[in-house]
Length: 434
Picture 1 (tube, rainbow, N blue to C red):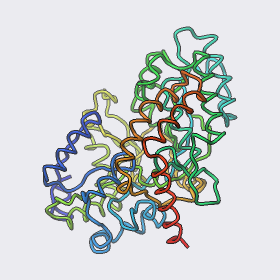
Picture 2: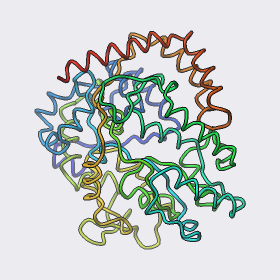
Picture 3: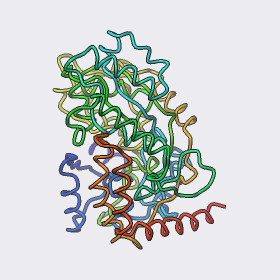
């Protein structure tokens, strides 16, 4: 990459991988110690808004106009609009699925064994019939791993702002509701309580995640794990995990500001050469050769080409031994320029375009809440959520009892002040959208 970049923009590159488990500690240290670096991965779910409030990332509009001229045409207006905070752009999103689908990855062996018709699955009731079959007939196999499905259901039905305040999907009015008082929300968690009582969840439900789900499926100990979906997610996961899974969608795709900001690269305020960093970003969106080096490594060593844009592992090499563990193409640049693996759908990127066209956009797309005016209340409310949220999501106890206690404790933590601030900022933002 450095050889190629020297020719293109007179720059070299140093990659600094940090595993997810150490990410917060190591990146926080980089930020507070003013360590010089150019680009960092960021996301709505990974401190983007907080870091922007602290001035960690440079504003990008002028830099992009000068050194990233190809980017706006490639990303398009909606992607860029959804990435702004307070009208300003501080990081650039990956060109990928715009929004998320919702559902499950299932062990294909068991789907085939019981001849489940997954083409017709649209609802949770359809899933329940499968979970019951697995529970009744497969001792030692957990029907569904992880409470992650509750997060996915929440994301499919609400554009969350903060502290259980959200704009419901399909809302025609720019108004936040309190999900703890929403009958739809309460009914869903009653269902989760029932699933738990049916013995469908894993015993580690409070701590298990999607990785554990995939590992248990691989070991023949689980049937399903919830996932946010996109076209071909099952094929991607089959390649990276080494076990064949298929996907089912339980809700149509939906786009919120959080989704628009789901994977981004920001230029650090400590960058010694922001112009060169933007030139590099411009290439990540426009130059397939550079992008595929970053994604997949070196041709002949880490992968071999089967045709122009289709690749496979070299002979004798597999996912565990390939030597360039790509963290995920979804993290960088323009995914539509990525090579496809042999077992992926050759029309994958066409399917992504269709997916992006059918996804429903939240009425609050582009709104980002500034927590500064209520940050002490937010800290108190986060502690209250820690106390009750996980138990609710596990389905371990009657949701109405937990929600009643949660609301009571939340009130003394300053919920009303946060709610008023959310309403004020939403109304202010609504004026700018007219």
